[in-house]
Image (cartoon, rainbow, N blue to C red):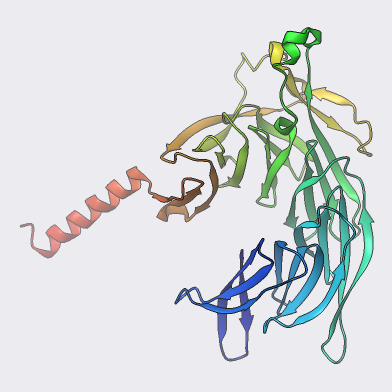
Length: 362
């Protein structure tokens, strides 16, 4: 689901664009809630959407890559040969787009002819990930990032498509884990998977299993982490500032965090039977040297500052309206609007004093 804004010269109208596993695309009027247009019986289900407002077109990804104009007319399409199909799309400079397909990122270039027709061609295939790509985001005008099921975070040049930084988050088992009964308690593979990436252009926040991992774009190093931020996998994250962030999880909670310096009694290097997080850096992803978190200089920690409990199911996503509140959605079929209690109390007091002034203190 995404928004589609098109400028007709005199007016600018924003519509809501949705795609479904029933192999359909729909355009909605957000003011009335009515469906304006729909396309059904596509060749495959649509897994992701990308709007290119400058060209006034949108791109759908799934079993094939399709380019549509504002009137829902197919401009061009290109099949792909991946079993998983296209799972994520982002816009790159010079009329290029990046598509995540299994372990690869395929770069396509859109060409607009003199007769306004559009064609798409594959220009590069990036095969540096060792496992399925779970997240793909723009960082800024010159960089984008991808995260994999194996815990790989790669920072890319958005123009030359070269690797600018590589981090591998691994789970290192302790020697005690050689016992059969201990291996039963070893972490499941999903605990190292990157479920979600978000950025403010200066930092990248990665949801890694049930933990959170903050990476500096400027220094290309880890700046903070929390290996057990939730009781279950983290599904969505947001950077509120350079020092504040938010996350939600399968455990039904929404938590707020602040980046703080590690205390003298930092988290131990080994956490016994359950292993520990390690970070690796390398020019090539094949065999990165490993580095303990506590050995990384200037590493900081994430301190819990707030916990929102109200959902009975996994919280899939949230939208922040800053001082106006926060909206969360969950598998319990509820949307909850949260307000800052202290701010609301101040607003009520201010409204009361204004009312008293209007009534001359009565």
